Length: 232
Ligand SMILES: *Cc1c(COP(=O)(O)O)cnc(C)c1O
Image (cartoon, rainbow, N blue to C red; front, side):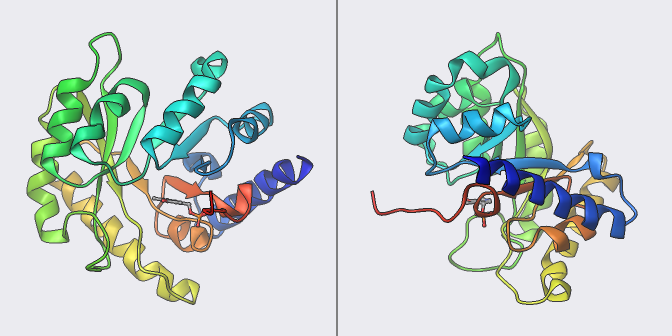
C-alpha cells in the first residue's frame, strides 16, 4: 500500500506548513491517524512507516483491531474518538490510552471506575458541541466549565483538554471561527486552574484552520486511508 505512506507524508507536510504559518513548532502537533473502517493491516502499514497514534470510533471494531495488533501494543497509542454509550465503557477503559469523546459526567465516572489499577490514568478530553448543532454530541460551552471541573476530580482519569467536531465550513477563515471558540474555552479553563495541554481539533478538511488556532492533536482519517466504505 504505497499510497498510504505517501498520504501520511502529505498530511505531515500539511501540518508542518500550517504550523510554520502559525509560528508554531510542528512537533507540538500530534497526528492521530483515524483508522475506523480500515483493516488492521492498514494500521500495521502506517505503524511501520512511523505512525504511532491511531483513532477508532466503534467499540467492537476497535477491540478486534487492538487484538489483531497485540504484538505492537507497546508502541501504539489507541485513542477512542467515537460516541460512547454507558454500557460500552468497560472495554474502552480497559484497552485504550485516550478517550476524546467524553460528553457527559456519567461516562467519565464509569471510565474512572472501570480503569484497571495496573494501568496509568486514562487520558480524556471533554467533547464540546462548539457549533451548537442539535445533531452533535458534546457539552455546551456554558456547561463545559462545571463538567470539566467534575471530570478533573475523578481519580482514574487525567483530563487533558477539549475536543470538538465543528460544523463544516467552506473557507479556512470560516473554519477558524469554531476552532478559535474552542481555544478560548480551553484558555478559560486553564485560567480557572485546570492543568490542560490538549486541543483535539482538525480533520482532513480543516486541519490547517485547526493548527492555526492552536490544535495539539489533529484527527485525520480520509486524507491518510482514503474514503470510507460503510456498506459492509
Ligand atoms: C471519522 C472522524 C475523524 C476523521 O475524519 P476525516 O474527515 O476522515 O479526516 C476525526 N474525528 C472524529 C471524531 C471522527 O469520527
